[in-house]
Image 1 (cartoon, rainbow, N blue to C red):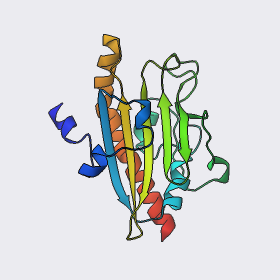
Image 2 (image 1 turned 90 degrees about the horizontal axis):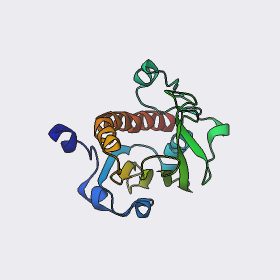
Image 3 (image 1 turned 120 degrees about the horizontal axis):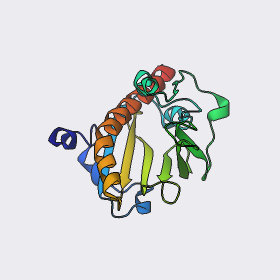
Image 4 (image 1 turned 45 degrees about the vertical axis):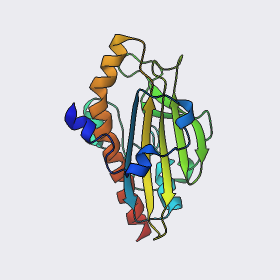
Length: 195
């Protein structure tokens, strides 16, 4: 666990870790919070075009598709921007687990809580739809040199159930590794599109 905690803010600066970001107010006193970041040599609009189309039934998760598909998630990350995936509105679902997977009739999806192109996408999970109360937010911050910072923040409350607390602890390393790869996957695609 010590190694995990040492990397839970991979790539984020000290100011980014403690700074307020849109969506933080939805979980004002999180038990767990992580901020990951990377610098992308591309403008915000280019990065946004990849970010906004993420999802199992859309452009994929830009992470380790082979690992996700090894457990049957049927995720295929695209290498092209598609017009039909360029719009999200509050209330829309961003699917990460397909319907009927592992006894989940509706699969698992985050609801869009806030969208501000090309800067902010806040995804929400909360009861009664989900056992956890949390946010997963993405932020694109333009830099003076023409690059951009891409941040992913996760904030969750401690679940009431001991089983859910255990599931949170066991899932945290996987989430950290997959989110880190996701940021790199978006960076790679955005930078290639900007050449």
